[in-house]
Amino acid sequence: MPRLPKKLRVLRKFLECKIRQGIITMARQCDLTGKSRQANHKVSHSNIKTRTFKQPNLKTKKIYDPESGQTIRLKVAASTLKTLDKMGLSKFIRKMYK
Image 1: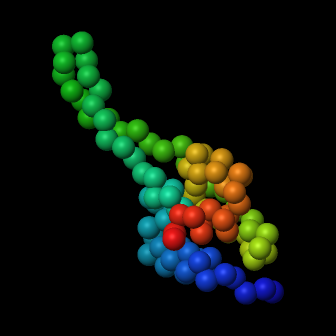
Image 2: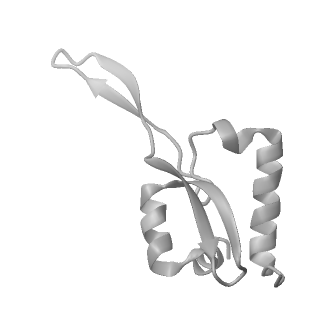
């Protein structure tokens, strides 16, 4: 099996550490970009502000990296998934984590 590039090894180690800590399994957060919920106010006609949250559109996907031959299961935002389709995992990680 070919050796993973350094960036992927670092990311994989980071993700495995987060999984062991139980952070990735429960958090509503994109594993690659860190996108999470956004706080907003719902404003009524009488100007009463109620706090609401916008959740990211997260999907659990198995992502295959052809360079390393590895399949990784990640919780990814739909917008990130579109970028991954265009660029590929390795190129995306290189660009994000310079």
